Structure formats: structure tokens, C-alpha cells
Length: 175
Length: 328
Image 1 (cartoon, rainbow over the protein chains, first blue to last red):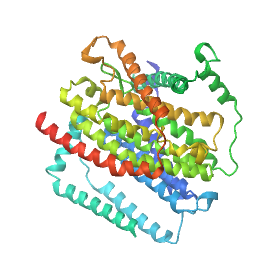
Image 2: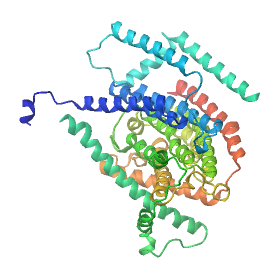
Image 3: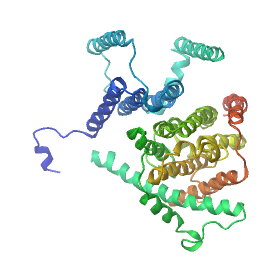
Image 4: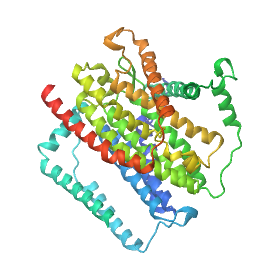
């Protein structure tokens, strides 16, 4: 196509267009989560944001992470949240509110957290990999191997934490 | 070129796939009604066209032209979204299923197994949203039952999938079908198939696990407030889910698009037809079960899962680990 090179600005690549769409989706989801007046809509906004983050992972060629994100956050955690809302709130006829007394303190903590994250993002020298990544099949295998060699202790600690959470949930349910 | 390769071709493939699946859905309803009728010594639909073959078309036209009714107290946006959300997972799971030698439906991603698990995890959203947004107690109860059931049965299903994954040694479904298996692997896999099939029945809300939509106590559960084409979408989701899970089972347990003993292995165009034949046989199983087994009580359903299926699945996984380590 000869005419396209003459444009004053470079044509966006597919990746850029898709990234903008995904980013828009994530931000919309996050805004719904934070601002919508209905608690159930908040939960759905959260699901949208989770999906957006998974999309970003796919663009970064981290498919394993993306699918894990959907599997764990969308499939399990968000389902449990909607489940909890349905079981605990009088949600028929819209008697739900998404805010409570803790709004101010939460806002302050979130703002501080945001500051720390932005500071990190700007100041840390992130390593850049220019080379092609190895096949992701190999990456998953490497990931699994590192869990039981280099990062064995954190991995086992995490497992212990999850076990404690499980036991705690059962204990709470029995009361 | 980028645009064509990355967007246009996958879109065309997806459209073709969706057309095939929707036709499959339409004739699956005919297949089921005919079979159920034969199981009950009736004839089944036989008025529209020869052998009632035009019946699905008549049904579709009827659903499309029905009046659009939205309940006053419903949460409109979510109410409209729910049927679509129920249908989408059933369709996109197909992306990773191989349909012919080396040809996946959309993409050969090397996370095929995880993709199936992840999409199975989000399948319950359509039903949850439908039940909640209808603002109807029956719908809500149906949705609660359904999500509890799906979350519970996903556990043994996931553990079984992990066992198959360990035997296969890789995440890609395309290479899973291509890689030859040892004889003991086949036998070990087929031993598990009945249990896996039970999990699938529960995941797809099929009879005898259709408690979320029991007609006699919940008046069709989560879909009570839906009519016309929106009801048809739920119907479509359930039936396409049947087709999809059959294709998954055919791929995991019965060699997918391949004929037994590597017969005619070089004829690539034969693949989709072999897969379709296997899917039809597995669909027969679904309908056979529906015609013969009664519905359990809800507590029985849960007890069966947590006290039988899950421990068995875990035991199966442990033995599979040992087998993989010592025999492969």
C-alpha cells in the first residue's frame, strides 16, 4: 500500500490499538467498582477490570499468567464475592449501598498506596529484555521448577498461609 | 499484513465456527426430542418437514418473533447482559480444541488445558446474573443453587484435568492428540471417564443435575423471567455447552479428530467429520442419561460431590503422579 507511508503520523500497530481498548476496559471496570452506587454492580465492575488485566498479560506474551488471572480472580474470587453479596445482603429491590463509614480512611490508605506504586514505577530501573522470549511451554516448565528449587521457601510459606485460611474458614463456618 | 493475520483471519474462522455451532445447536434440539421420544416409545416431532427436520427452524422463528418483555423491577442492563454472558463462554472455549491434524479451531496456544479450566470457571456468571437481575425469588434460588453446584463440581473436574495434564506432559491440546499414548495410559484414562462425565453433567446443568432449573419447585429457576429470544439464548448456551464439552471429552479421552489405530491419518479434511461423529456419540450419552436417571435431592448432590467425587479425584491424581514418575 503506497499511500500509507506518506501519512504525517505512523499508523498504529494492532498491538497498540488492542492495548488502548484493553486499558479502557480495565479503567472502566475499576471506575464502576469504585463509583457505582449498587454493590452488585461494583462486583461486576471488578470482574471487568480483572479481565482487562488478563488482556494486558496476553499482550505481554504472558499467557500463563493471563489464564491464571482469569482462573483465580474471575473464576473463583469474583464468583465468591458475588455469591457472598447474594447471600448476605437484602439485595432484592436495590437496598444495597456500596459505601460505609470507613470511606475516608480507605481513601487515604488507597491514595498512599497509589503514591508508593507510582514512586516505584518511576524510580526503579526495570530490566528490559530485548531478545525474543523462549517458548512459553518452556517458560511454564521453568516456572514450575523454580517453585520447587530457588523459591521453595516462599512457595511453601504461601501454601501454609492458604492452609491456615482454609482451616480458619472451616472454623468460622462451624460457629 | 499484520492486521490481516492478527484480526481478519481469526475473525473469519470464528464466524465459521459460530455458524457451525449454531446449526449444531438447532439440530441438537431435534436430535434430543427425537431420541427422548424413542426412549419413551413416542414418535417425536414429525410435522415440520420430513422426519420433523424443519422443526428447529420453526422454533427459531417463533423465538425471534415473540414479544420482548422485561420485568419492571429488573435491573435492565444486567438483565439484558446475562443471556449473552451465558452463551459466550460456551463458544470461546472452542478456540483451543483441535479440529484436524495440527489445526486448532482458532489458535494453538500452549495453555489449552488452563484455558478450558478458566472458561469453565466463568461459565456460572450468566446464570448468576440472570438470577439476580430478574428480581424474582425463584430465579435467585435457581442461580444460588447453580453457582454452588458449579463451584463444587469444578473442583473434582479440575483435579481430573490436572491428572490428564500430567499424563500428557504438556498444556497444548493439539500436541495432546498427536502424541501417542501407551496402552496403560488409555486404560487408566478410561477408568476415570465415567466420573469425569458426571462432573461434566453437573457443570452443564444437565439432567439429572438440572436442579437450578427444576420445573416443579423453581418454575425453571434462573430463567423464569426470560422469554422469546433471550430465553432462546439460555437454551442455546446449555446446548452449545453440551456440544463443547462433548468435543472436549472426545479430545481428551478418545483421540479427538483421529480414527482409531491411526487409520487414514494423512487425510486432513477427514478430521472435523471424525470429531463430529465422536461428538454425536457422546451427545447420545447425555440424552440417554436424561431419559433414564432421576433427579437427586440437593443435599445428595452436594454429598456425592464432596464426600465421594473429590476424595476419589484426589486419590486418582496421587496414583497418576506415581504412574507418571515410574512408568514414563
